[in-house]
Each structure stands twice: as C-alpha cells, then as structure tokens.
Image 1: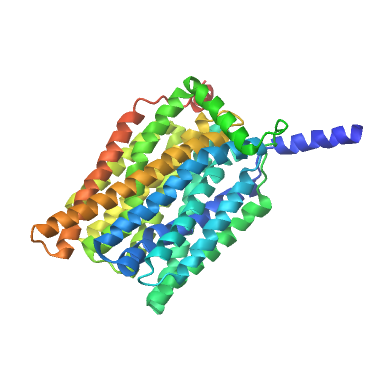
Image 2: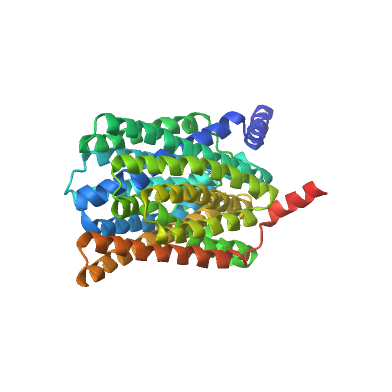
Length: 450
C-alpha cells in the first residue's frame, strides 16, 4: 500500500514538474515541421500548381477558395468537441499525433495529382488541410503545459519563429530542385519532400514531450462524446465569467479572415498580377518566412514588455497598411517588399493571438479554450477564402463582360477582392479595442513592477 502511494506521489510530482528544455524544443520542432507544410502546400507551390495547372483560369481561384473553406468548416465543427474530449481524457498528444499523421499521408498523396485531376486534387488537399489545422488545436493546447502564464508570450513567439525557419529550410530545398531540374514532376515531388520533412520534425514530439494532464473518470455508461457536450455546455453556461474571452474570439474570428485570405491567395496574386513563375513564388515565400521569424520574435518580446493586446493591435495596424498598399503596387520588386512586411506583421498577429488564448484559459480547460479559438479561426478561414474566391471570380466575369481581355479581367478581379481583406482586418481591430487585457498576465506584470 505504501509503495503504491509513493508511486502515485512520484507520478504527481513528475507531472507537475516544470517543462524541460528538451520538451520545449520538441514543441518548437513540431512547428518547424508543420510550417513546411504551410510554406509549400498552402503558400508557395500547391496553391499555384492547383490554380494554374490542375484547374486553370479564374475558376482555379474559386475552387481553391472552396477547398480551403470545406477543410476549415470541418475543423470548426470538430475542434470544440475533440478539445473537450482531449482535456477530459488527458489525450491532447494522442489527438495531435493522429491528425498530424492524416496531414502527412495526404500531403504525400498530392504527388499523384496531375493537371486536370480536379476532384482528387481537391480531396487530397482537403484531407491534408483538415489534419494540419485540427492538429494545431492540440499543439496549441499543450502551450500552457510547457510555459507559465508570464512565459507564454516568449515561448509562443519562439515557436512561431522556429516554425517559420522550418518553412524556409523546406522551401530552399524545393527551390534548389526546381532550379536544377525543373518541370511538373519536381513540383509534385516537393510534396513528398514536405511530407518527409513534416514527419521527421514530429519525432521529437513523439519521443520527448510529456502530457501533464491526468485523465478523469467517466460516470458509468457515459461516452466521451457525452462528456464533451456536457463540458461544453458547462463552459457555455459560465460564459459570463469568460465574456472578455468571447469578445476576443469574436474579434479574432473577424480579423483572422483577413490573415487567412492573405496567406491562401498570396501565390495566386503573385502569379496573376505580376506573372511570377514557380521559382519566383518560392523566393517570395522564403522572404515572407524570413521576416516571419523576425516578426514572431519581436512581437513575442513586445507582448511581454507592453502586453499582449497592445502588441496585437500594433501588428494588425501594420497588416492593414500592407494590404492597402497592394492596391497601388505595379512592380514585382515592390511586391517582394510588401510580402516581407506582410510576413513580419501576420506572424505577430497569429503568435500573440495564441498567447492571449492561453492567458484567458483556466487551468484544466486549455484544450477547450483552444478549441473555441480554433472555431473562430477555422470559421473565419472558411468564410474569408470563400468570400475572396467568389469576389475575385465574379469580378473577373464582370470585367470580362465589359470588353477586357481574360488576363486583365482576372487581375482587376483580384485587386478588387483585396479590399475585402482590409475590411475584415479593420473590423476585427475595432472589436479587439473593446477587449480587456487577460488578467493573468496583467497581474503578473503588476507584480513584477512592484
């Protein structure tokens, strides 16, 4: 009996122990790998390949927006339920690894998508994207387990910075192959390389990162789904206690539309407006990723020295300025500069938004709160790309009917749709201004000042 009690005490002590340096690096390296997916599949290569080679024309823009939207809608529905189950069962890491495997498998499957294969091109991407986005719910939910509230800004910023560097490394590998060999085969081969890169970077998470949450006992005859809805119901009924978090999620839902629209259509904008080929698009995205490292690091520091809200406002204001500048850009050189500034700003928005969610989350509800965070993010990710794709395609048809040639009509449609990005960012910023800074960090800062 005494031996069992001693083992239990030792387990509790081990689970409550601060995160080790190795565990934090395991968490960082996961971002290193999944950022390669974002850089190659979402930003630089597959989006342009799907739009230009698999589909073609303004219809490619529309179908890309629909594909992104479907994936985000699925994740928006699943996130809060699975988040509640993960919190209750102490299985955030298991869910993380399951959805990561889904993303890796179907990222590799993109190799088999040939020009004209619209259905499998959409299907494989949607499944890879569901895995990528759903895994982030549980990856983000592990942040409070490896960082104290006052450390979250710095740790989150480090994760984004190291992750952005992973995107750079993978893009450089892909760029070298395209420059040396060239052709659609190498473009498709880049998806196999990205899947392998993602898998290798996930291994430290599998081997080193412990989950500290203890599984809770279910009532007899109660399923995990019932538990999830019961916990979500309790959280919704206690919404008055979390009203600032709800306001923050509302703001995030709106401004994240603009962020996701910018990311999902950057390569298409570059290819259509400036005639950038695959090599130029990869170089462009490498520049974006480099400045993303600096942005994540700087805004992580600012979220500690100022506070998370002020840091987030600063990054949003910069992002709005960058997007509006797109309306007046007429040279590829200036577009490279715009991309650099956008990379710097958008990782600040994403990193600090994650930090604020972790600061709002009560102990034992991190995955639930990050599940709601993902609902906001994925719902907006569903709305934003669909809106942008629809506006760009419909505007292209309108201008085409007014006598413009097909390319000019498509270019005018894309520029017109850019205005919607600025609208979403500005509206989200206005809502954010009414949100109070999370009290956990504010208290920590006051205590430090005293």
